[in-house]
Length: 313
Image (cartoon, rainbow, N blue to C red; front, side):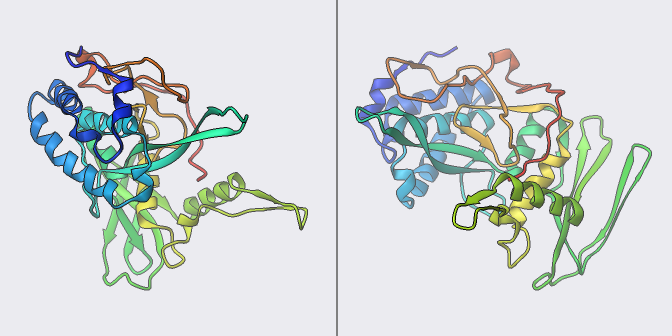
């Protein structure tokens, strides 16, 4: 499916800050984008190259990432036509992480820093709409204790009544909801309220328990995002949880080997190889391919009927 082939050894000539100046990389990104979206690959690449290079230049950790992981991140981004441009409703982020790639000659663990593309809750809504799972979805709305809010379920029909009362400063976050218009134009609502947030916080505490050797007991501490907003749950974190909760019965989204969903805790569905790299040798984790055949690209999802608990983190 690719006319542009790259050898993995070629990436060793570059670093995180200059890999997107490589002409072969530019050609591959443009090729993948145009394959997915018809045209506009050149404009996409120029826009995102500027975004990538600015973000990387401002992060000492992203500067340490391998050139190859920067490449796979922008390829993944091109598949979904998202952007890493910062903003209140950013659709994707660049996240550095250390990966254990084996043992060194001294038998100690060896790590390398890789860039991951994290798709935000807003980005996930864009992807699901593009995949035809939904017609569109309103931006999730965070509810505070001074707002007027009620929700109800009658048979299979859900309804919400909401009135925003500003200002919200100094008020408690009590929930979040989202309105979804399905592909058949029927309307669906989903919400997360205080009780569910506290339940998730409890799961997080158990999942993050640590043994205190000095006191000979476990210490339980939930993800700090549950209280980082002046004692309230972080609103971006809550929005991601609301989106995950809303789509837990929908088909899973396929993502690339360098991509994670902000709302996803188990392994998301991975797709076939689209990177066009001829592997000679590379220290890596178990690789997962990405990029379905061309005639499957418009769907971009697979059905997963298995159920899983909410993300404890």
